[in-house]
Amino acid sequence: MALHFDLDPNHVTVDDSLAHCVPPALAAYYLALPLAREDGRASVVMAHPENDAAVQTLSRLLQAEVIPLHSSAEAIQAVLARLYPSAAPAAPKILAWSDAPEWETAVTAAAAAFSRVLEAPVTGLLTGAPLSEALAIARQGSYDLTVLHLPERMPLTAVMRQSATPILLVRGHHDSLRHILVALRGFASDTQTLDWMAPFALLPGEHVTILPLAGGLLNPGGHHHPADQATSAHLEHCLRRLQKSGIQANLKFRQGHPVQQVIDELEQGEYDLLLVAAEAEGSFVTRLLTAVDAQHLHAHRPIFILKPPAV
Picture (cartoon, rainbow, N blue to C red):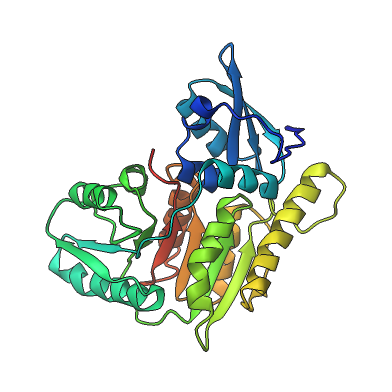
């Protein structure tokens, strides 16, 4: 278990050259702040030091073994806000892609649905070009979302590795987005997942279910271990965020492996949209999609995949 670090946003000294090894968007995604590096080791204060994928990514960027220290999300956010003052947000942009006529209608419809709710015009539609080319355009053009279907010969991990944006994975033509399932991984990315979901949840007649993935990190059990207290606080933070936004949601817990928990919930409810976050190149999300397809669940319905910013 990581040691606790009492991070005081007003009195912490940050090595700017080290901090800038981690892109600001990625630091915000993981809520991670490098403090010092010496003898091949780097001390990194994190809101979720148990996030192994984040630790591995940070280790690669810092070219050092990461020694994770735990501190509160609020303290880390305060320091990141000081280091990287946020500029006024630009108008969001959506890129849609398909490589076959039979997919064009479904991809266009899904992009249009997100465009209406997010008030983000679809500023690009590529058909026939290789997906790698479309993902490069999304990166170079600072797009905020890429709407696509998964090509037969390209695994999801390859798409995740190349994509600089979150992905709306189109799996068929499906018009409604009224029933939404949000799987919470128990990491800092959960808050960004909720932010993407919020505009849909605020529409009249929307039904949102929050599924904290227990048995991994978000366990509704007792608080007998410091890790239990930390994960409980994270879930409470997420729920307060929903309440502050005026969003009403059903909260459900399931047992078993996290992938199986999502499968069980999809079996019980007719959800129109599933939202889930990836922590690196999407190994968990890939296992989840493989299981969903194997059991013929969530047929033709889209899956929104939040992912770490490109580095």
